[in-house]
Image (cartoon, rainbow, N blue to C red):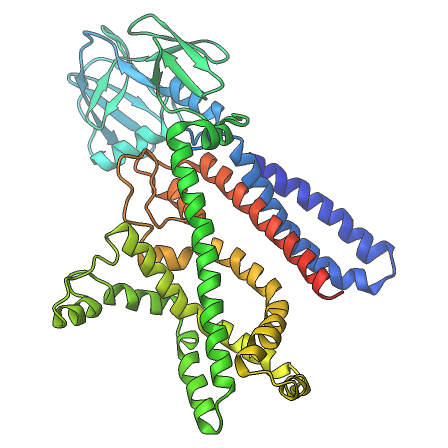
Length: 467
């Protein structure tokens, strides 16, 4: 519902702005800028606003329908009248009408009729064709309110493709959201906060999604079970992002400095070799490593066996799984750092090093007091951006470990290597207890605010550096 309103309102506003841009004002810059505004609104603002809305609802498995749809389901739920007789029937098609035959009674009806009255016995006319079960079912779908009046037993309805029954509503509607169970005679109560109809305190039928306020956020921070899972994932997310940045930067900087001191063709050859991991598609590399790290058949454990070392459960043990994802991410991430840092080092004027050599500085002192500070100064904004990227590095985690190994005895679907983004995916699409879109949207909003904070920090740091 919210998404429809958001699209309609956004469309009207964009239409009015478009009329003003292309019809009423004369600045060409606005005309070129307008398509970007349209894309930004439709593909950024609308999805973000919808995610915010969903985070304040109980949208999840069992609560995917709107309230009016749930009420319609209750109104349409039927049951066979107790102790009523079931009747076999057949339907025949004539040229312009149909004939319904029940035991020794029959009645004819046309395509648009909603009622047929059964009369006395009659012989079947010549040339009529009996409908198949599939055709009868199609007719039943087209005539949900079709009634058959039996002269002795009263009103009947379609029950199966070959059987009629006396049907009555399971729930009798008393008012807006008020129903009575025709079996027990008890009233259904509506829990609007939970979006559920209940009978004697037990949930009945599907629920509907409704605004639940801050319930999802409160559950994240105050419900003991959910809080444990969330904070565990949050802690690992920051640890994973920080270590990934630290390791890739350290190795990239080390190799950049070492290779920069080489001479001749060897420098070019080594640089090409170290850039190879960066040239292979990311997901292919991860899947290759997943095979190599297999406990029973992986190449790495095969080599360890040859050295009489026990196989390591790379992806099954929580500690080794975390080591594995960090090492694989290091292998895939350091070439980028190598390229960037190499460019920074080559842009440093050689006169600085010449001046330091006159003062008797060693290579290590040059690196410590000149190269490293200059590289770090230029790299800080990039490192913050890399931190934000690794916080949302869903593919690397999901393809290698699937978030596992699974954390035992927790209610939420989460593993030891799940970061917030993969935890959100599991909540929305892989929950053993069903999909929980409301909670997933709440977590995604927290991720959004963390990334916004990092982006603002990046701008601030960049501004300070450039002063």
